[in-house]
Length: 101
Image 1 (tube, rainbow, N blue to C red):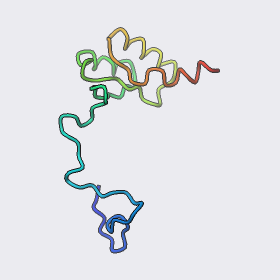
Image 2 (cartoon, rainbow, N blue to C red):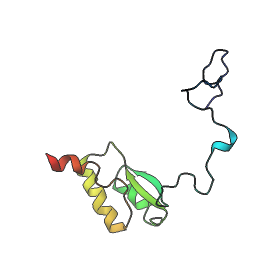
Image 3 (tube, helix red, strand yellow):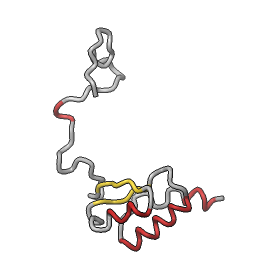
């Protein structure tokens, strides 16, 4: 973020309908920053080896499968996550689309 400094800048002049400028009091508490509502932090998984990182931290971090992972690899990642007892946040993201076809 860079503070807008232009003389005609709408954000700097705080017009209605524009994005708000961040202020000191706008950030979240450091303990809960980045936490999901269920208490886990997210870790993006792109392959099966990334799941091995979460093996020791499966009570703090939840795996989120990257959007560019194919459905074939997604199934393999899901099976490995079940073995390691790692929570996957978007486990049936692409599976819904392939089941209907």
